[in-house]
Length: 236
Image (cartoon, rainbow, N blue to C red):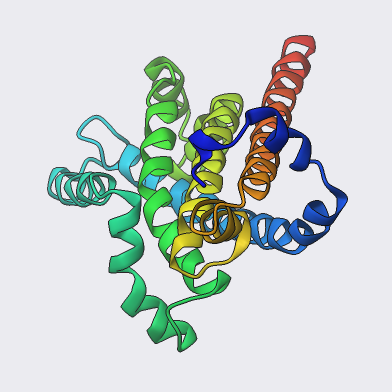
């Protein structure tokens, strides 16, 4: 029976069954694991690439037009790929690293590869918002490029970077659900394998509740941290 043929209220009530939620503890843990690890990889590499794009910009600290053009084009190419295609393209890479193309660890490669370019652009956009006068003043007093990056650019844009990272983490979470179709496990796997293919709509609804809760939690924490930093900065 399709979802359209199932009484909504019956499915809604059944989705709160304790038996269903017991089955979802493990997949929820797999989703959290994939999201956390992928987000950490995205944070480190995305921040690095975003800083690199900013300083090699024609108006940056180390203008390298050729490098900026090539790296920017590569990032745009990666960002243009749909998430499903990125997962398929990363299958050989995952097999090379982990010896298999399925499972949570294998899909973390594809999730990270898909989200790093996005976060790199977010970082670049945040860093480019800094008033050029502050950078010029720092250069005038003899500050090195490293000092400007770590004492001016990053500290001044931390609230914006956190908000951007929050958006990126939610994208990571959504991709873990998609990766469930390719053997990654997690909530996405349950939603597709039981909720869609076997018409167990109560499990599908329960998976939706969990994903909504995760998104609200991530967004709430991100907003809270960003506001606290801004509040502390205003008090100084």
